[in-house]
Image (cartoon, rainbow, N blue to C red; front, side, top):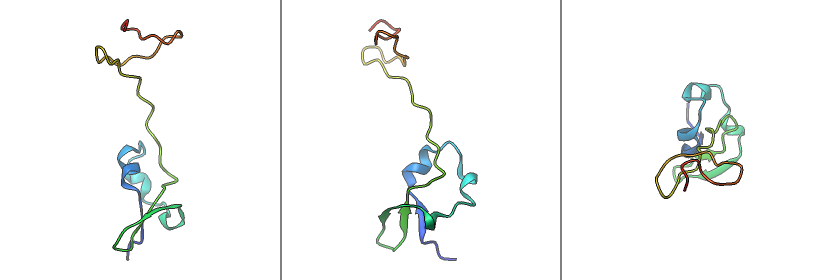
Length: 77
Protein backbone atom coordinates (compact mmCIF):
# COMPACT_ATOMS: atom_id res chain seq x y z
CA UNK A 1 0.00 0.00 0.00
CA UNK A 2 1.44 3.36 -1.05
CA UNK A 3 0.96 6.26 1.34
CA UNK A 4 -0.19 9.36 -0.54
CA UNK A 5 -1.62 11.51 2.27
CA UNK A 6 -0.38 12.09 5.82
CA UNK A 7 -1.43 14.44 8.61
CA UNK A 8 0.74 17.53 9.03
CA UNK A 9 3.37 16.48 11.59
CA UNK A 10 3.05 19.57 13.77
CA UNK A 11 -0.59 18.68 14.35
CA UNK A 12 0.38 15.17 15.46
CA UNK A 13 2.89 16.43 18.01
CA UNK A 14 0.25 18.54 19.77
CA UNK A 15 -2.75 16.21 19.43
CA UNK A 16 -4.26 14.98 22.69
CA UNK A 17 -5.92 11.94 21.03
CA UNK A 18 -2.71 9.95 20.54
CA UNK A 19 -1.64 8.01 17.46
CA UNK A 20 -4.09 5.11 17.95
CA UNK A 21 -6.96 7.52 17.21
CA UNK A 22 -5.52 8.03 13.70
CA UNK A 23 -5.77 4.42 12.57
CA UNK A 24 -9.20 4.71 10.93
CA UNK A 25 -8.98 8.29 9.63
CA UNK A 26 -9.21 8.85 5.87
CA UNK A 27 -6.40 11.34 5.26
CA UNK A 28 -6.96 11.37 1.48
CA UNK A 29 -10.32 13.11 2.00
CA UNK A 30 -8.90 15.88 4.23
CA UNK A 31 -7.87 19.42 3.23
CA UNK A 32 -4.38 19.47 1.66
CA UNK A 33 -1.82 21.77 3.30
CA UNK A 34 1.45 20.95 1.56
CA UNK A 35 2.78 18.63 -1.14
CA UNK A 36 6.28 17.22 -0.57
CA UNK A 37 8.83 16.54 -3.35
CA UNK A 38 8.24 12.77 -3.03
CA UNK A 39 4.57 13.29 -3.96
CA UNK A 40 3.12 12.77 -0.48
CA UNK A 41 0.50 15.34 0.53
CA UNK A 42 0.29 16.68 4.10
CA UNK A 43 -3.30 17.37 5.21
CA UNK A 44 -5.14 19.23 7.95
CA UNK A 45 -6.33 16.42 10.19
CA UNK A 46 -10.04 16.59 11.05
CA UNK A 47 -9.41 14.38 14.08
CA UNK A 48 -6.91 16.76 15.67
CA UNK A 49 -7.65 17.67 19.27
CA UNK A 50 -5.65 20.66 20.50
CA UNK A 51 -4.39 20.75 24.07
CA UNK A 52 -5.92 23.19 26.53
CA UNK A 53 -4.32 26.62 26.45
CA UNK A 54 -1.57 27.12 29.01
CA UNK A 55 -1.88 30.04 31.40
CA UNK A 56 0.32 33.06 30.64
CA UNK A 57 3.89 33.13 31.83
CA UNK A 58 4.94 36.08 34.02
CA UNK A 59 7.91 37.77 32.33
CA UNK A 60 9.20 39.01 35.70
CA UNK A 61 9.32 35.80 37.75
CA UNK A 62 8.50 33.01 35.28
CA UNK A 63 5.43 31.79 37.18
CA UNK A 64 2.46 30.43 35.23
CA UNK A 65 -0.57 32.40 36.36
CA UNK A 66 -4.23 32.69 35.47
CA UNK A 67 -4.93 36.43 35.18
CA UNK A 68 -7.24 37.99 37.76
CA UNK A 69 -10.40 39.85 36.60
CA UNK A 70 -8.47 43.16 36.57
CA UNK A 71 -5.82 41.63 34.26
CA UNK A 72 -3.10 41.44 36.90
CA UNK A 73 -1.30 38.22 37.77
CA UNK A 74 -1.57 36.48 41.17
CA UNK A 75 2.20 36.63 41.59
CA UNK A 76 1.88 40.41 41.84
CA UNK A 77 3.80 41.39 38.71
